[in-house]
Length: 234
Image (cartoon, rainbow, N blue to C red):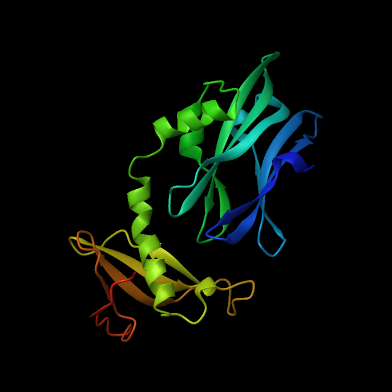
């Protein structure tokens, strides 16, 4: 069952990404289970992530979802959502937390397993405490790591390099030239985007200079990979 007062829309830059749903249910044995779910922009439930009572929380029973809230929005690519549960463990009441990530570009929800496992047995009882913990433990390189992809997306959209910005996605390549970061602009299929959902083609690529932030792209000649300079974005 969804919990109405603890489910809400997630928006970024004036666009609705989807709806974060906090919910409560029961296992086959009648024990309380909590979960998080994601409803995409089209209104279809796309993701259900069991938490208390399942996986790492197998030995706990979910009594109730105590608090849900956004922990951080400064990351250009992700929004972090924290959830605090009141649980029953070893016959006693306790608190447990989970942290989820909303990918702004893909509009998807996932459990941040590293941060969630890092909370461990902190027994944080309120959202303010969870925000404070997150600020002290978030990866310091997170913003920088995703900033390149955000800047490439901004350049593509501002300079109208693709017909429909909603039907492309961006993949940062692991291996690039020294001093440069490579981002591939890929087709995205499904929903209103035509094409086989199982197939994704590279449309073109963009190199970003790690110091000057200037961009080179092979958009005019992706077959041969001939790169030319992109005008600076605003």
